[in-house]
Image 1 (cartoon, rainbow, N blue to C red):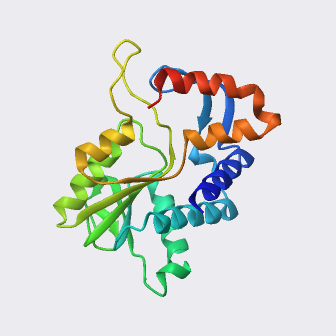
Image 2: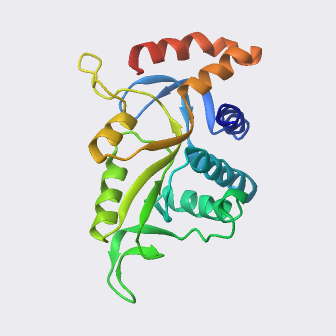
Image 3: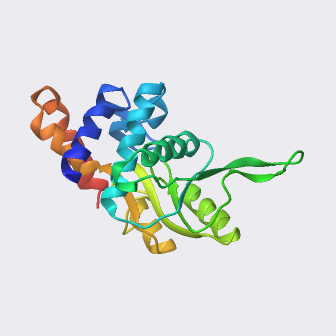
Length: 222
């Protein structure tokens, strides 16, 4: 079930030190009571399991797609792991799952260009860790469309369900909602802030963080 999958992922992220509680200053300058750093999924075993979570979330979403795209840099190993897991997923049969990724700077020798991997074609799912400002998605959508392919969805690990902007001028929507409205494609997440809050409700060892995370969501959440 999607709910139990999300809860399992939150616990997995906590076990790996990817999800932490305390006080953290975010890129926007906010003080957040939790922090999620997907870069700490950094060994073969946990990245393999992470790929399975991505694969299951995409299968559960029931979306039609032909391939994956990983925006440089974090999206590269994420799309690779998800592609491997999808290729072994029983719901996909023996269907191959091609993937591609971009370079930050165009290569001026050899085959050249910005793109590496399978040719961008058909319905493409963009794979990333989180959506903050939507810059990576915007650049990915442009690359995919320029190649004549169709952006089909964005697949992320965690939806922070958080509005952008200064405290006195918060946006009406979260970064995920803005991406969906701007590009007309769905965003699929393995888990969301509500799943983190459910963990804090159920786990007495983590109860000390519950009020701070709830207050943060009340201030900045959607």
